[in-house]
Length: 297
Image (cartoon, rainbow, N blue to C red; front, side, top):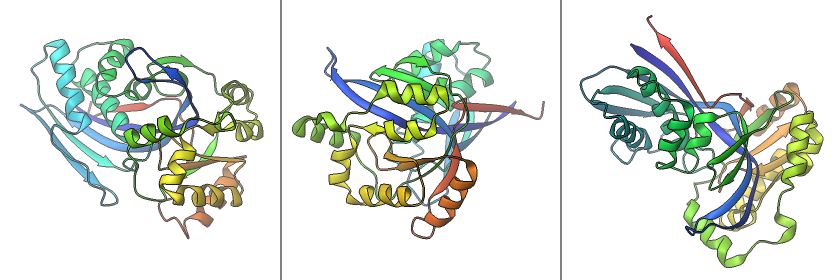
């Protein structure tokens, strides 16, 4: 059997830090969304587990045990006692250290794909539990769509999305360390005006109110990341000037995105922004985080 898999990126419509958990991690409240930008993975039976990585833009991605794909495969094999191998090829399109969940989406795709390839029959909930040991965003990437995420991101509640939404997204500068951003946030604190309105954003998404969504976007990590990477601020303003009804940084950065009223406005903005930001891509919201196609059956 051979599988072709899409490992889809994510964006944060909102991201708030509401407290500290007993284990010392930040307690988050977020609206997370799968988008059509994706890494491409192929997977087939083999005597041992191997990974080959190809990058579309020269970004360095390890192909050893430091890659979350192989970590996910090892965790799944250990949990189930499966001793089968797999030949995995990964082509990277999601930018690295960008807050778009690239590594997490790859891990989620590995879990879901190997679950099919090895015939394990595990449910989504079981895959999410395994994924949480790999990374906080992996459970979301396993489930995908639009989710209200709390805790460290593992407590997921599905949110109905009224209609597909159109976005541009790109990484305007080098990546950011999540640890560095959260350390700076702890030192500087959060101003009330930097907090997103999660409830208003969720209502806008369920009603299809794109302008209301644009007004409600927010990310408490953005002020810190903007100071660390001033290019983020310039990129957000450029997206707004190109006609977005709202633009923000996603995750801990450094990628930014903007949401548009309709596909035509989004396409025009993407063409305009590519003159300054060649990596800018048009995309839309997606209902699933991982898409698997069986080849040759």
